[in-house]
Length: 361
Ligand code: F6R
Image (cartoon, rainbow, N blue to C red; front, side):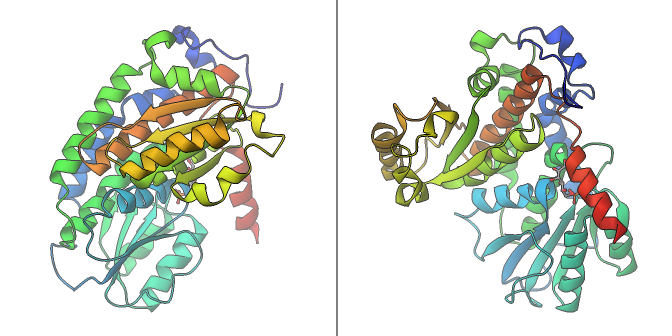
């Protein structure tokens, strides 16, 4: 058996999940709503030096990598119908040319030690951008302090990707303090929706009535391809990355309606289509033409070609709540798949090894 893998555990044998999920990552996801509420409370009290209003903001950049960037992707999607200025998420060593004095740069690194993020922080400093940091420690915390810049300090001790409920509220609060959004209703609804999904899909709920377990069961043995429509684009990206890091499977993400202009063309002609299990993240409040496109895509491309089609309907009035509902279900499904496959979901040994090698030179 490869290192980090164990005998898989049946999804209704929850008393034995600990044999695989050694650090109880499932418990973290089950507590998503409580963590999001705690994170939101903390964010509203934090970084008092970063007050409401202040300098005019003409654009927003979230500078971060992987699990520390997804919060920016979700917020950018969820508030795109409200944000009066452009918002971009940058995962690289430097910022785009439009980053200048009036740009709010939210530098997000859970560990505070990610080299690309630290490099973007220095770039933002050079360009005189308005900077706020989000971190639990490390070099980023030290540099923010040294430069006298505001910092949302997060609790340490979890994997960055599992810290999403703590990483997301400071992004939202930063936009609120720049007077770009009024997020109270969306945050409160997101906390409520996350609690409902986590409750309905908790470990003790049997497979037959547990959507997250059913999704995991349907995905085992295939390659997940997750489509997010409209504002659920970032949720699909989160599903893909959680499937990469928790059960450690190769996965893809795509989006509607864009996939209608390229991806749709391949399903009937590529002989490998049957290896892929399609997940459609549906937004009941999405554009009606996108809903029609999804139905036609199933008929013309997916049915009879893909190895399976699973549909997940987002819930909530606000776009943020609908994104969070899809994210929580995907997070749970990814951990259930890890347990079923016998892969400890917490360690990300290759990512850690790469960072260690890079640190040597
Ligand atoms: C690990 C994870 C990674 C990290 C990324 C950046 O759980 O999700 O994608 O988030 O390597 O590290 P941080 O978040 O510490 O800046």
